[in-house]
Image 1 (spheres, rainbow, N blue to C red):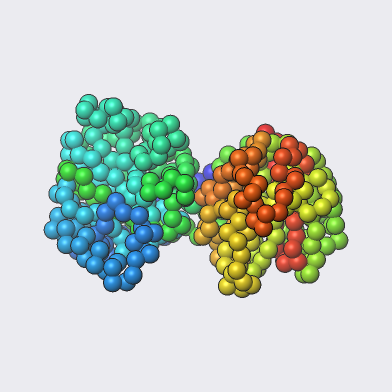
Image 2 (image 1 turned 60 degrees about the vertical axis):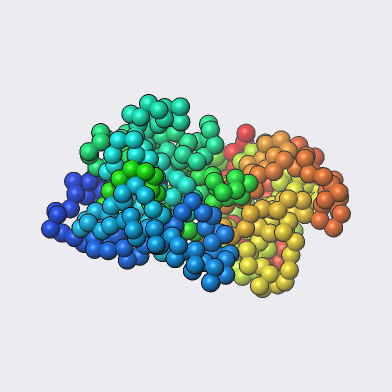
Length: 443
C-alpha cells in the first residue's frame, strides 16, 4: 500500500485496538474514531432494517410497493430477535439480518464481535455474502475448512484468493474479536485482531458469478443459529483519491512508465492531435486518431488513469498495427466511454459501453467514478484473452477467439482479432478525454 494509506491505516488500527478493550458499561453511545461514523448508536435499531440472503439489485428493481412489503416482512423477524443492550447489539441466533438502511460504495468498516461455540455468522458487504465468522474448533465443519478460521470470503469459489483466511487469527470463545474490512471496488482486505487475513482479493458475486458485485449496497450482520454480540460498529466512506491510491499501490512490481507526463517521447502516430495538460495526455477537441507507445507488445498488462468529460469517447488500442482503425485492424479497441453516454448523445449497443471489446463483447456497466474524477483501470492481455478491471472491479473477462464472428455488432468483420502482437495506445474520438500514469508490464 502507499505510504499515505499505511499512515492512515496505522492510525485507524491504533484506534481500533484501543476500542477493542470495550466501552465502559455506563457509556451507551459508541464514540467513533476520527473520520468514522457509528452504524449502531448504542440505544436502539435506528438506521437498521431487516434483510436476508437476497440479491440487492433485485430488491432495488422492485416497485416501491413490493420493496416496502418485502422489507416489512424482514423487519418483523429482525426486530423480534435483535436487541440493543447498551454498547452491544445482540442477536439470539434467529431472525432476519441486521441490514443498514444506507447503501455504501468504497468503505472501511470496523466491528467487534463475540459469539458462542458452534455459532456461524458473517458480514455481508454491499449485500453480498460474506466475510465469514465461525467456530474454528468445530470438527464437524473442518470439511468446510472452519479450522482455517474466520475472516475469509467464504462465498468465493474453492481455491479463489480470499476464500480461506491467510492465517488463523481468531481469539478463544468468550473474548471479543475485532475486524477491519477495507473494500474498494470488488477488492477486499480483512484484518482480524490486527492480523491481515485477506489481502486485496476480488469478492465474487454469490448471486451471479458472471457479473461483478454491485457498486453500492448495504452492510449486513448475518444471523446463523447461535447468539452473537456486536459492538463498536463504525464505517468510513473512502473518497476517490484515496481509493485510487490504494488500487495503484498493489501489485505494482514490474511496471514501466511509458509516458513521462511532459513529452511524447517514445510515442508515435498523429501526436499533433493531442496535448499534454497537467501531466496528462488529452485529445484536442474535434481531433482524433490513434497514438501509441512505439514498442511492440505480445502479452502485457496496462495500468492507467483516465478522466472523462460528459459524453466523452475514446478507446484503448490493443495490439494495434500502427495504422488503420484499431477497433478492426488491431486485436480490439477497448472502449473508454462515459457510462451515461446515452443521456448525452443517444443510444448505443451494449458492446460500445465502457470497457467493452468494441463491437464484440460487452463489459459490465456502472463502475465508473463521477464525471470529473479520475478512474483507475488495469488491462491484461494474454493470448486471445482480455481482462479489464475498472476501479477495483473486473468488468470484462473474455476469450476473443471464442466469440462467433456472426454475432459481431453490425455483422462487421474484425480481421485484426487474431493478432498476436502490436502496439498499445489511445484511439481518440474528438473529445478531451485525459490519460495519465500510464504503465506497461510485459508478461
